[in-house]
Length: 64
Image 1 (cartoon, rainbow, N blue to C red):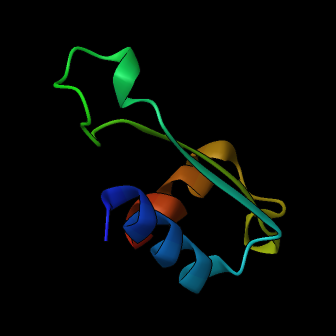
Image 2 (cartoon, one colour):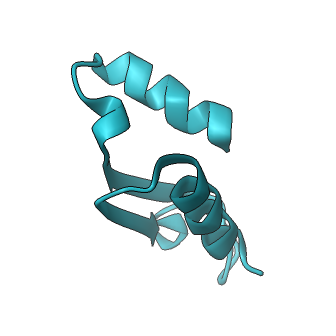
């Protein structure tokens, strides 16, 4: 399982999101070709309703 697949699995299990995108942006950084080191996560979920941005980040970081 790739790192990207692992992230998707963990977030799906933890949040049951309405929308989830995990985008590998490693190619935009100075890393070897094929690296999985930088990701952008777009997630829409009821768990984030009425939470500040930093609280949303903390929820995702705790899962990962």
